[in-house]
Length: 86
Image (cartoon, rainbow, N blue to C red):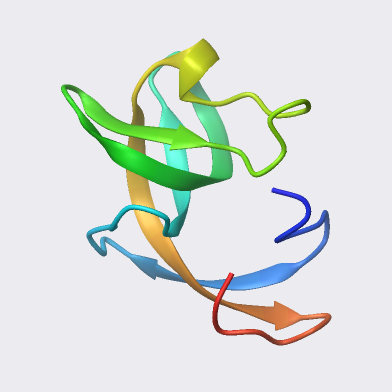
């Protein structure tokens, strides 16, 4: 999710929240059941949400993996640079 988030950033997630387009979210993939990812919501589709990464050249997202299940909405980055809007 660079440049919005980097590895080892700590975020606050509201579990079960309903996302809106452009929200940063925590997702689960049907094709990768043990993996959680942070992506940006594009729109709702049959079977879940179409999500994208902020870096189109280095991101695996709904274009490759299909619809994602949104687990929660990222509300803030807590560390290292606190920020409410991502």
